[in-house]
Picture 1 (cartoon, rainbow, N blue to C red):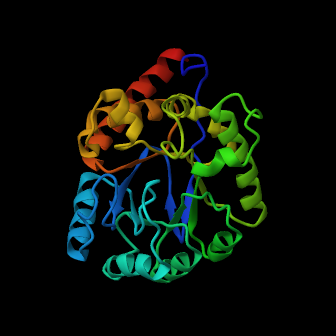
Picture 2 (picture 1 turned 30 degrees about the horizontal axis):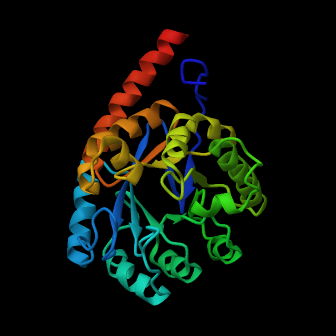
Picture 3 (picture 1 turned 90 degrees about the vertical axis):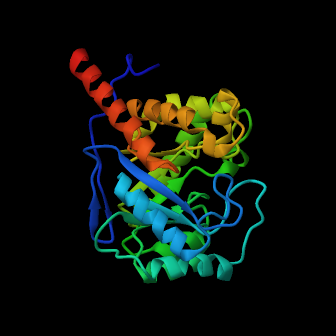
Length: 291
């Protein structure tokens, strides 16, 4: 089923992020800031605080609605860092940010102790690549007012029997159904979901998720997709260096927007925003023509 066969839901759920409301009358842009020496896309480039702050300013001027800061690489080949080291990388940046204006600040972490520290600083969103499958992570955000970005984890395939689902989107759908119901039952109202494109998924599975994003509209929460510079983009376009995968990334992001994505997580804010606005315009014209 493609977009021409199924109208995308017109509901635009909002989320409240510690008193600041994020609405989705348009697709939002989440700019990525990796404060790590070994990020796959820009390793070490923003490890120094002043460079990191300059990049936040740049992404803000280019139109980022959210800045997602990570102090630990989640690349499969990366070596985990200690809680102390991760906080050490992030804290100097947070100390110099204004949380009352400008882009919302998201922290990409899977460590409860890191969550507790960054929440003290004032961040708005916690982005957990393990999908809040750790009870301690859930406890660390309980009654804090932050929005939760729940990514379908790379280890999703270990949660189910191999023959239980025919397609990857069915598996991801099942995970989100369980997880959104669980979190809502525990009092969490501001949820965002992310199918985890590129995390332990094959090329075919990544493409399938981008094409079937609209399925996750059933949960009535905003959907994030992170395609920017991913390995499968390089494989398809035959571009080896991550920072040169711009065209393939933006085209895939635009396709995701047409199919229902609400947030685009990107390393290239300026160009992704251009692709998003074009996709929104084409999607809007299609919807008018199909009425």
